[in-house]
Image (cartoon, rainbow, N blue to C red; front, side, top):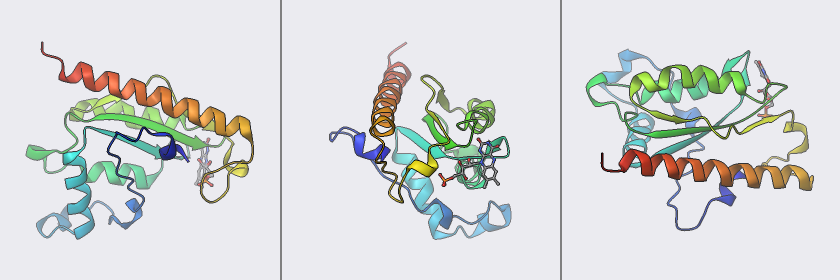
Length: 166
Ligand SMILES: Cc1cc2nc3c(=O)[nH]c(=O)nc-3n(C[C@H](O)[C@H](O)[C@H](O)COP(=O)(O)O)c2cc1C
């Protein structure tokens, strides 16, 4: 439901096929799979990535880590470098805080700008959502709307700072 809250003048690509990426394996780099080429080109053209993810065992889901690993290669042409990255997670009791921290710990080393504030971490709401991510609980819908708006404002602010003349 989160992407429905984004303003119409923003060009948004929803990447809901991240599970089509093969597991990171440098042996595949000589003949890159089509999904990897597509993913890298989308990121290359993007200003910012808003990554929605769950938390698995106090860390990011392997699909999220895998998708990130693919855009950190090759080292001389990392498409992740310079991107503004924000997370939104839905998980169990943690809300995904550990998953976000795990990724935030290394992304700056790759030249990405991580927007940590305001944190968007939904704890134990999965059972209140339908398959499309909608909820009949008005309070949940309202808090997702508010969270997306404030996160987006922070991302836009980070982009302005990144692009401001020094
Ligand atoms: C293997 C596994 C480990 C998980 N570990 C955590 C965890 O450490 N912390 C947490 O808050 N939620 C954890 N969860 C819950 C998930 O983050 C998520 O809320 C749950 O799988 C519902 O996902 P859904 O929204 O895709 O239905 C775990 C789930 C799985 C399957």
